[in-house]
Image 1 (tube, each protein chain N blue to C red):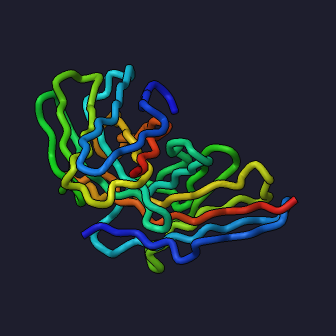
Image 2: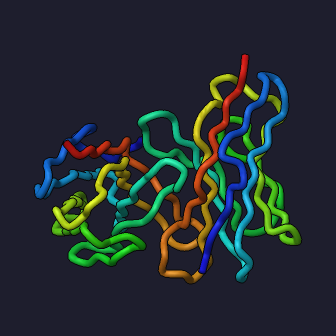
Image 3: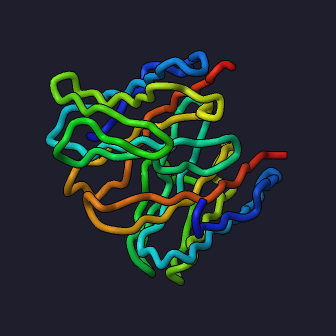
Length: 114
Length: 114
């Protein structure tokens, strides 16, 4: 079964500092991995995805994520956090050929402090 | 939130009542989905539809029903059999296949029990 884990419910970081939001996935084949962001009372917005190729994926709003197969991780990163980055972040996985839609992690609330 | 409209934004259900959440998209997407979001649990798939007049149960379909009579519309009915309906409900649609697939979300409906 496809699954992802986000080990941190909450991440706090000072504005201007680098941020990392962690995600690990279950091992089964070569997954497609995604990051979505949700602002209060809104739907989710796509940030980036990893399908194949370069392990470092660049996405919207200056975010990037690194696929690490040996650690089964797909952590979201940004070199310099903004207060406006404060939101709920979801990691998601889908395995190629699976009839299922995305399976989402439990979410990580990111707060960037001014 | 793209071209996906969910209504109403807030909905209240009385004991024993069925309520219907609307989801309309003008993106010409074949596939549509309903997710339920509870705090700390991420998104869980209720139902999905890959094509008109066809839909499949997700992980938590009990107490819910859907229809897909038109490509643009995928309403969700929360029946009286759903004993814990209070949650944030998100509708999504997707384009592309496999690696090119990407989810677009509506802005959600908050359902509460009176």
